[in-house]
Length: 243
Image 1 (cartoon, one colour):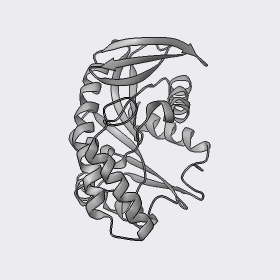
Image 2 (cartoon, rainbow, N blue to C red):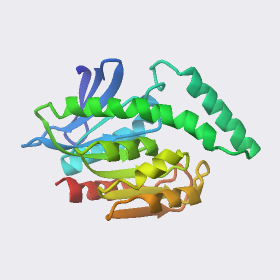
Image 3 (tube, rainbow, N blue to C red):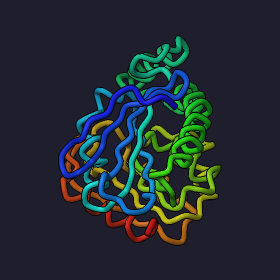
Image 4 (cartoon, rainbow, N blue to C red):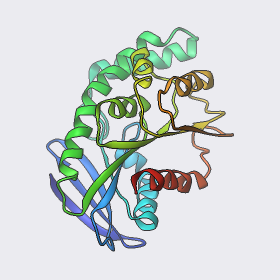
């Protein structure tokens, strides 16, 4: 890991950009911590710079108010990383199928499964490196999307102790089966009127999760209408399970 920039931001938080091989990322750490901090991995649908305001808002809140470290990395094929021709074609096919009202399952598999196969090992390699830093000590939480990536990590990665997942309906059938294997505490955030997701499919996925402790936070509104108080609700969820 190479840190490429660093700056102190509001409320005693250090923000550092880094690269891990070809993977760019950002790490936020509290500057006043007296012991190694628990870590939250912040997932997103791709495009770190595009998503930066929302990612940084959550990460800074976790660091400043709860003493957590937080980190994100760029997804394969997003941001400045090399594009995949197969993924670009799948996205075009998905847009066309949505407009035409055609079946989506085969297209979703072509788009999401290769992304999960590439992204999950990258997250695990990032986790290995972050936990080697003296200021970070675990335990670890995962939050955000793509939800299929969060599901895969929750199944594969024993160091992840809790997950806050952002509901989405573009979930391959294999991810639904993996969801039944999850046993860690979960909190799932669902926008009830999300114009880009099928509500019933999201509810079916929540029902499939095998965790004995799982909570659904459903709010009225579209994809970008998540209430601001959900940031603190997520932080309190992690405080219960990472402290």
